[in-house]
Length: 73
Image 1 (cartoon, rainbow, N blue to C red):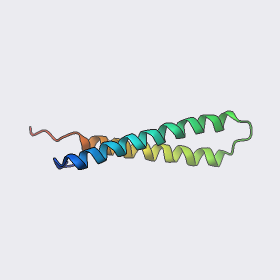
Image 2: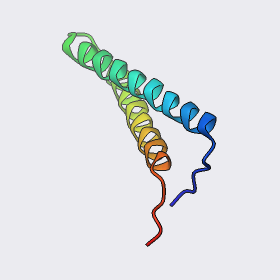
Image 3: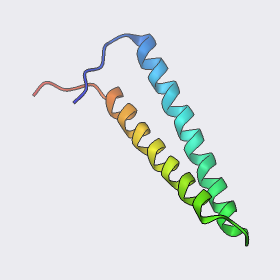
């Protein structure tokens, strides 16, 4: 598990980055749906967009996990 410093500025920066990544993820989802709905979409473009979307999801999960403080057992 990651150790999160108690620095409020760092926490705010990470939370802002999570929001930015979520927006990009949502925008990619919409773009993929539109591209797939068109008759002349390129499969390679769709695959690249889906790969980027998965990378964003992983980054979001890592940052959100880092924002959760570790609890001492």
